[in-house]
Image (tube, rainbow, N blue to C red; front, side, top):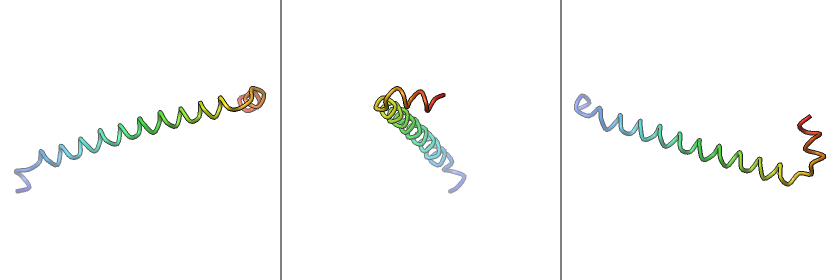
Length: 52
C-alpha cells in the first residue's frame, strides 16, 4: 500500500510548498506596503533623521 501511493504524498508536499511560498509572497508584499504607508505618514524631517 505504501509502495503504491507515493504520488499523492508527493502532490501534497508540492501543494504545501506552493501554498507556503504564496503566503510568504503575500505577507511580504503587505509588509512592504505597510512600511511604505508608515513612511509616507512621517514628516520628512524625522525621515532624514531616521535614515541618516
